[in-house]
Image (cartoon, rainbow, N blue to C red; front, side):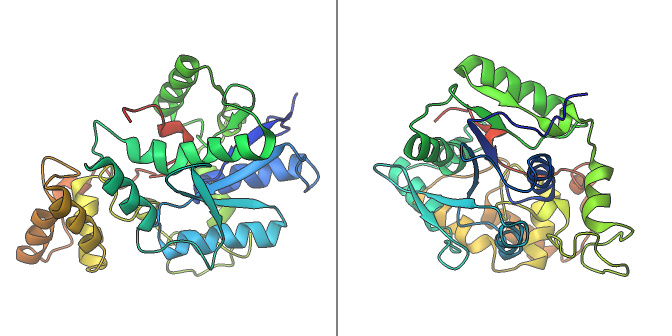
Length: 292
């Protein structure tokens, strides 16, 4: 049986900063004896609104596995990105805010161009800069599992539409969410309250709903309200963008309205959150193709 993690370059490995794509990167490294071919490029795109735990996790993966992870941030003008690192990475939403100021409007659930500009296009630009290749001339390895069928279908449809070569090694290997959890957490049930040794010696340290962009509008209302309760400083950046642009990220509730709801109902119970708690918010290449 062909090893699904054995990649024939040129290829781009999209590392979202979550456990799933990190697992994919680890398996690809193992399939190549711990050293990637020169034409296989690993990229992590930082929006400036990632959790500090995410940044530290990406840094640890690179350091512990001795693999070059290209940290990218969106910038206006050519080449369309700046290469940063753990210490120099933006932490106050600077790339995202620059994009919003340039577009003079906000992304939302129907126009998720934040993903395209902040994550996808910088990765494409890096491949152009490093290898002189355009999308379709290289393989795009995306960390979607076998149990994420709809997202895989959508990603494949986008790839076909835009002439991209999309590959999902985890889906081909039949990897599911429990496999990822076991790899990173072992017998632990709570990533923030460890009672057993970590199988890899380190972990992301976040619940699935906490990762990537901290108050992403793609997360359910209940999750965002819970996030605001637990991280009261987090909504201010998002609310400031809505005020500056006189708009909203989610037409159902502005961030200021969510803050008000949390203020008047300081409870950790939200009926809206029940069907969202398993949502793994790993933003990346599979989200691209929306209106820009």
